[in-house]
Amino acid sequence: MLKLAGGAALTLPFESGAETLLANTNWNSGAVAHLLPTVSDRRMLLKASFQLAQSKPPRLAVGKRAVIGRMTDSAGKFWEFDAANLEPARPYEITLVNAAGKPLCDAWTIKTFPAPTDQPKQLRLLIYTCAGGHDALRDEQGQTRFLPLATRIRLLERGLSFKPDALIANGDHVYWDLRTRASIALGGSKQAEAFAGKFNRVLPVLGTENERVLTRAVGPQVAELYGTRCRSLPVFFIQDDHDYFENDEADDKFVSFPPDDFMLRLARASRRLYYPEFLPDENRPMGLASASALDSPRGVSECFGTLRYGQLLEALMYDCRRFMTLTGPSATFVPREVEEWLAQRMAASGVAHVMNIPSTPPGWSAGKWGEWYPDILDQQGKLGIARPKPYWQEGWGAQHDRLLKAASAMKGRVPLFVSGDLHAIAAGRIHRSGQHDLRANPITTILSGPLGTGRGGWPSSARGTGAKPPAKLEVEEALSPIEENGFIIADFTPEKIAIQFFRWKAGQAEAAAEGAIDNLQPFHSLELKRPA
Image (cartoon, rainbow, N blue to C red; front, top):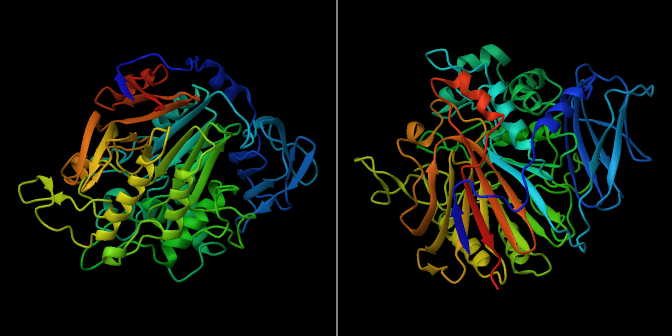
């Protein structure tokens, strides 16, 4: 059952953000620049950076367990901490000290997730996309091309004020495009080189001058946005096209994906330094593409992850860029082995809700090359399939249909997709995809809203059209795409999913309007009851 209402009450009550903001104000970050942790039921992985390099490994105490930091850069400013063999559903006090035992910041707490056999009664998630953007990049009028960092911080803090149990940031954490046609607008301009320097594509990323360019480009977009605000909140970061330092574009001169070696090394280095990989899951094969790399923490995955919360939710997260292929009818966005894993998890029992979180959205198109759909603008400016989309692959659409069929076939669950990439807020149900009838259990699809999109970044201005349902789909739009910044709060209980949509529109009175962010309320709600 899909029910939409304006400003309806949540399943779980919203609380004032004053306590959260006060806790951040009173907490002393000391020598720490940023902290981003993730957890499973028995493990925690923390990415951290410091204002000054640490000449010897710092130590993290997780309860009574001591973890020695592992340096992830070449200078000693970036470290990761991997704490295993923890107890499920337990809050742990965390302390971080230098090699001499001196505290580097105040202590804090974080809680592990319930065990897969546990039966938690509720879960709250904060979800958004496109949080990246750099204040150094400006348009011809001298205005920032993205939502200013200070405004993004306020939006993030408003989302955090609702006290989610975890955060999912779905793609485009970094905008610093280097070679595509859109790079001037999205990061690869002379402004970018003047600010951070120029990458040398024949040198390693870490341990060379490229490392300084990387940290100057990425640091303000990730470390300065999050700081230590999420120290007690498990985070899940999915990468998308811009996180490989290019926009997905294709013409006879340049095809940007799959990523070349230097793009791949930039994306891996960004994750290695700034945000955690996905921890292992007993139901996700350890040998899937991007998993169990020898230079990463034991068993983690970079592209395909799981948020397992007892028997309440299994969220399946997947990067649709790194392994996309260009092989016509057999082309895929994710490897076949990954598709098989996704289908197996959707078919399995033992969890109330299964949510798909791909980096590329089903349900809408803006005529972009690297979409599931062949739709493109015609000469009259209408989106459709009257002319072929150059370099689009038929196999992408076929994989889309297989995944939607697997989701629709789930018994006793709402087939839910929450996606990134497309700069909009939207909700709808997919009843048909080509010849595939999904009416027995329609696909609910949601665009979570972008945190950082600014002037010129919206589809209607960047691509000449807003997001629209593709020609091959039959979509019931409960909320047509809105080109504004925002996020969603998703509440899961055993019986249903309640989703609240938040929007904020920058305008001429932007400075005055920013104060309204601190009291932002949902403008729409979506209630999804599990079918009998």
